[in-house]
Length: 559
Image (cartoon, rainbow, N blue to C red; front, side, top):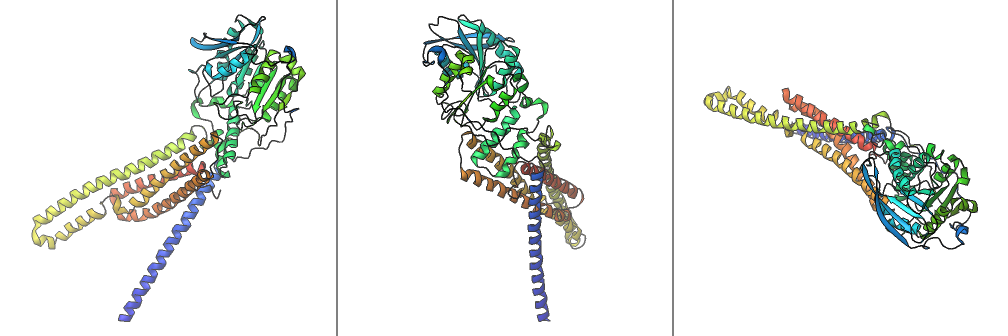
């Protein structure tokens, strides 16, 4: 008998080990399947990103960017005159706009003038003080208005309306003493190059347009192009690039970023003015090969209407180095010579000169996300998931607190009744009272007794960590991109951390789901209903947030 008992005990131990190993294997299998499921959703829920390569090339006629100086005897234009500056103001729709005017001193004949249009990174007239002084020293009156900022925000801006505001300054420039009204043109940088053609169409007497670091394509296409170029320069994992169309291609509700689809080409097609375009070869944010070709293909005069210059090693602001370094000197010289006599400069040529530019991919139409990740749904899905998660946690906390209180009240009452009944009742009916006390400790003992507290806590914590780490990673990569820097440890180490946290969240999800049947058995009555409802909402909210994380790049190594 003893031997039989020992064999039976050994068999039970073996069965327990096998059962435990089987349970562990099931956890592993379900965890792998969960990770794969999130990865597949992330990979196929949104548009892919496969930009088309650039096939066209630009071959400058010469590396020398110089513009013909025949009109003024071959001498340098910049520095010929002393300059004087003053501040004036104009009114646009009741708003006062400050204007910086820099003029050459000692001109005998009426001078040409140029009105400056700001890019996205500038707003005050002093931002172009260096430019204005250089051009004025060449004999050109420089007129630089402040950008009107009361109608200009990150989310809302109107380029046609901005052209109306700049037109007020343009009209003022034409009326300045000593200015030839037939030789007043426009200088626009970056975002301003979407506005200048609008103003030129409304005022065909505009003498010329200088479009510097011009995207030409729509803001949405330019944004996707720039982000792609920046991320490739940083060296991010390829799977992160799929977030580009999901972000840049999305349409936000309420008209937010509606200007992203502004098309300047219809305005350029109606503009007959000579155009000077310039880029720095280190400007990764602009389609430096594609944009000038688009302009030449759409303006009435074709290539004969456009003069193009590329400056070796210069950035978006035609500076070598940072945004605080001086503008390339040759740029001011070339620009001023062209502005003094655009027609002769175009006739003398060459039309294209300077360094050879490089552009990897086209700035092209951005694929649109599916309906469930576009418009209002782009915000509704994560907000609804977060609200569901918060609601589930709240239900669990309130339910757990209530059953604890009820359990203590029930236990106190049962003990009191048992004490009043004496020893006899404790041995008889006291068993029922004792049972009530036991039920108060298990079925109504709070969330801890259900076996859900630990897995759900881990699930919520890991879900929030995945989202926080993904956001922190994107911000860190963005900073590297904007600084034109690389950091393999941050880029790849951060990516591995995000993926590891995502896997941990998936494992926590499996444990949480596996704990539900046990929780149902550990509860009874309304406690069971509220516990399962709270746990289900918590799990559902976490699943929704993990899907959002997967959509933006988590769970990516296998997708």
